[in-house]
Each structure stands twice: as structure tokens, then as C-alpha cells.
Length: 279
Image (cartoon, rainbow, N blue to C red; front, side):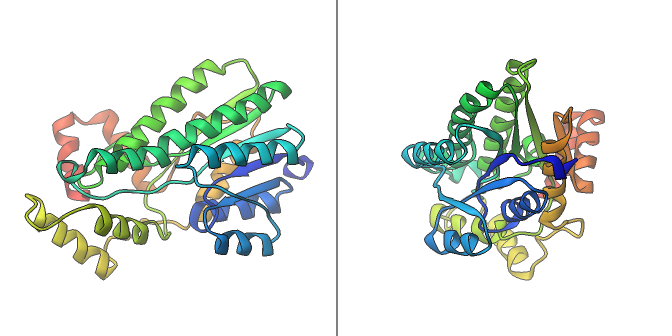
């Protein structure tokens, strides 16, 4: 079926990890892929790899507008798919996270996705078909401590996506959430940098927890033994793009599947104890 596809797809956050793996797979399967990244270095690397590239900072509304104008012109208004992948994870206890820091998290993980989706829908409605794939997380339906800003942003993305799916019923446009558990990527390196930039650990009531978290990151123990490569997520995105009836949710990795089962079966107090250990 994939060989019959010659459809345009915009994938955000393609510099590495899930975004790059998804862009590679979709291109290999015959899709016309518009790959975005923020830095000139990443754009140049993607261009050399054969992608049509667009510079995009999803936290900047004007950058989003410019990106979608470019896509609209390049594909003559016939955008079939949008993969909202670009995202960041801000660590830190919620009482140590300022309003400004929380707003930054939502600018990237929620508001940017929403703005891109609105622009994409104008093209998809005109052709009566389309696929919107939201890269969420298992932390969009269960929470762990010390990454509450990220938890909240993914919960928000899930709410937006569930509502959008209902509002698009019968339009020919499908919305799917992809909910990965631990994935091998540079995500933790970025999170460590954000912690250093945004959180004052000294004097915090959570200073001891931060020290343990730092030690785990430094030792590599923060990477779960259940972690999978980003290509596993890419394969699920391909399913959502090519299926005649895409699922509302795709869970990737054993922890994500198990967390969904536990949330359904366990009382909240018991689930809290499980998630505290994971945190």
C-alpha cells in the first residue's frame, strides 16, 4: 500500500530521534517529506540527506506561519499529513518552576502544535482527507515526579487531540496520538540542559531528589532497560499514515502499555506508589 502513496507530510523536530527516524521512514515509503529543524546546521544536514527542509521554531508564532506558507506553496495546498513531533521536557519540581518556565514548555509542546494543526486543517479540509499524528508520551496519561511541566503539557496535548478527533469525525481527517514510553534519544541531554538553565537547586526542598536524579543521568541509569529505538515509534507513525482507519492511540514500549493497564485497574493511591518509584 505504501508504494501507492505520493503524499506530502510535514514532520517537525527532525534533527534527531523520533523526528528524524520518522522522516527517514516516510521518505523511504514514498511520501514527500517536509522536514523541519531549528538550527542552520541541522537544516543543512537534512538537506544533504535529501529532504525538503524548512526552518521552524514551534515556540515562535511567526516562524510557524512562515513554515505553513512555505508548505502550502510547495505542495499546492495538498498537505496529506502532519506529524507534530517537536517537543522538549522541562525537569524540576513544580514548586521550583516559574510561570515563565511553564509557559515556555507549553509554547513548544502545546501552543505550537495547535497552531500548526490549525494551518494544516485548512489544506486537509479542502481535499477532504488527511492525517494528524501527535507525538505524545505515556506521561500524557500517567504522571511521574520532577517532570511535572512536561507531564502537564502532554496531558494538555492529549485533551486537545481527543477533542479534535471528535470534531473532525466524518471529515476524512484522522487524529492519532502516539504515546511512547522510554525511547533512546538525545531528549535526556536536552532536559539536563534545561534543568541547569531554569531551576535553582540550591535551597530547594527537593535538593536531595535533584542530586539523585543528576547521579542517575550521569551514570546512564536514567535510560530504562525497556527503552526502544526511535525507529519503533516511526513504524507506528507510518501505520497511522497509511491505515484506512487509524487508531486513536498507539502505545509504544512495554512500560507505556503496562502503565495504561495499571491506570485502568489500580486505585489512584496504588498507582501513585508505582509512579513514585519510576520517578
